[in-house]
Image (cartoon, rainbow, N blue to C red; front, side, top):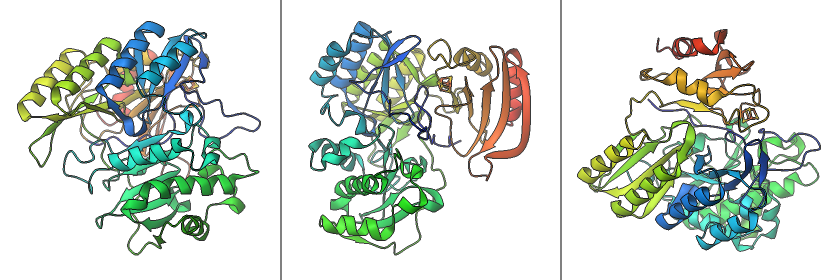
Length: 450
Ligand code: SF4
């Protein structure tokens, strides 16, 4: 069963649309956010790509400066929690040494999701990790200084053609095509505009699309493409002119536009590639991993041979480079450590925001309630995901068809079956108010798994 991709920023990230009069307080490696459990830092990992050394550095700063854990976000970034408000200098030094803070000025702009299995399983058109790294370098390189003015919420997506991260409603999306090029899309859904670009131009085209957004957003205070007033919308002609000014050839879409239908995120387990190599796809329950578990993943990535970890936008990690036997052994080690590599795990499709005690806005300890509701519940193929939220912001909720478990008090929830593709976002499944102790049965029924 595929999990519909998440479409908005993750737990403890701010609401998806700009609120009048508010500055962009999106946290970063240098700008800490004050939460009820201490300060929070968000470490950008473009494409979710990490070296073993970087992963080890994150475990170290988590234990030395934070609460000994890491949060995986729905953009494939990582968060440190429980930090002292005064640790900023030490944290920045640790991240900088590991290459996790290549630019102070552009740190919060480096929001890039990429197809996590790209180049590993034979699906899609090639490997988009090179494009991802080039775009990151372009963002940080300073060639377009105005890009430092992007909101920390602005999102780029590099999709290898399978449609997984293309469904994340990014502001700028590149979708690889069978001819070696890519479709460049600004915005999403019916309002998105798109052009075709050549492979060699993909990173620059993505950066220039963001420059065009900033030009259109001037005077509007829009943080994201979808926030632009209609009269400021990015147009195909304007985008093409922007690209042409910088020597990037772009063509009108000469074929059917790529579908907005969600693709399939990696299922937990061993993933076989056409070259005989295997990857291990790991699901991290509720996106929270302890430093010891994280060190194990880093050690396995080193042992696997690729030396790479790929954090997914679905709170998982892909470890490439194994043989079939070593992948199976690695998956067993991961499972023994309390993470998930079974495709039929009850954790598949279950998410929650930060909730209490980390978020002051939360009415309930949604993670504890989610854990109790999920324990021992089998997951049926086709069941929609469920997302537990501590307040109506619903930070990080999934897109598509999903079950909304919203805390209405410390001990009560309202379940609603939602579909973001419906005009009002709600299906005909109705609304159910339940006590927390009834959540397991009620959630199973709402997901159709009872
Ligand atoms: S309680 Fe509300 S604001 Fe806090 S993380 Fe959850 S959804 Fe977001």
